[in-house]
Image (tube, rainbow, N blue to C red; front, side, top):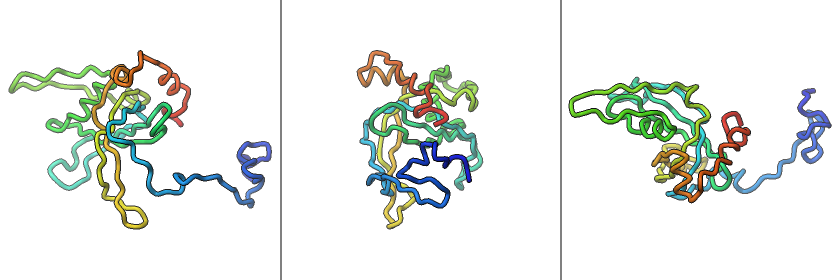
Length: 196
């Protein structure tokens, strides 16, 4: 018998389950059983942690196939709408399509170059994964977009898209806070942070 179902364990007390062959009874809400989650309204401001970063090539056929991009996984921090929800954002890492990555790096507090003079080029050292994980930024739900995926009934999923990436200071200013750092304490405690 695995030790996670010992009778002393909190999990073993879920409506009396005590052994490997006992059924568990879960108390579920309508949201738990829905294939659709409630959309966050356009304009909703969110405090996000960088939960994961993956360097990956573009897989879609076309002229950008094989070019590098970061797949950021952001997790919503704090209380209220969207707490714990995750967003995947693809940020191209090549000239001509760098704008999303640029906005994210700037919002995370990395020094970003000023645009070079006409006809000139500049170099930017892209932060690695370990420098990005756990950092916090703000963003706004910018639109709702139909997905290619469908639910069991064949209806397309609708997803939120993020935009207007900003520093946490700017986020606090926009939501009327005066530099409240409690949201960062919450991240450090593991509630909604990197390893939860």
